[in-house]
Length: 482
Image (tube, rainbow, N blue to C red; front, side):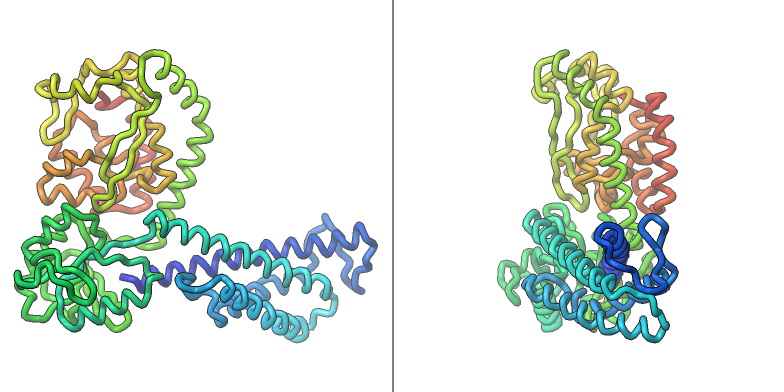
């Protein structure tokens, strides 16, 4: 559960540091040449490169060894340990210490590689620029992490099943490592007399039979079973409930004989876990998906800003009311967020909903009318071309949505879902999806839900790219739009 994420974060930090130090290397080289050009500082014998003519061969030889050594020193000095609970002054001295050790090793490298034309001024500049760049980078990461924690964006919420001694050790482990970003929602037990009582500082909020209800009423990212072996038969139905609703489940047992299609064995500092997931994400792929979302949404917002300004003006001057329509939607694992759209209806549309509810042309809990009288003239065009959805690029940039993913439902719609339909919330909602390119409002609600689960079960980056490409003609020809 945490081992893979820890490795991913460690690798990312090392890659970021390597990039920062590489940039510092080139900055130091430029400054060394700058001092020669503008201040007349002599080059060393054989150091016959001036600015603008590229990097001298001797400098190219030591680029990779210098970066490798410095990152290694950062690792050995504990710079990559969690910043949570540490003062920045501690991080500062770890970086300074790493820099000092690196300086000594740099000297040894130049000696053993017999690099005679290496400027000591360059090495000094590189050490200073590199250290300052690392300090700025780490300070930025610490500041960003603290901000994210304040907004509650980097926490995973756990529901724990069991109240035995092993559960106590597990809770203590979580409390000792706040940097893991885990919050315990509550405990679940099989004894009704324990409900409402506190164990290990956490309240028992229900029984095994209540897990399905608890998952619906709370934001739960993962359910962890730390139970005696005698509970395995009792827990089977609860695990099935988690599987149906698409919530990740971990079992602190050595073996569990359950026919689940995708099983992953992990551990947390000696706690053996079997994880059952409806999707088996690769952390790197998820990171790339989020990076892709951020890049596409930011680029699209910049490129499409002239169009969005024109649309905003048209919306404002063709009907009374605000330019944007903000609505609460349900996102990943039941998280609520505010979705933004260009207003395509008259300002009293919500009040008139009951008047036309009998005109609903969709089955299931969703409401769709082909010729909705509440839609403004400009709103019909925006809906046909999906222009009204453009402000959701901001939701993607914030991380509430993704470019590709199941469309975010309303809370009242989710309340009417069958259990198997709730699993569509196990993926971050998106701007477009299989439903969008398969006919949209022309297909039934149940088929819509099946398409979303099909996307989740077969998710990959290539699948996302394929859907995005197919979305273009679907939007241009307004296939199934209303």
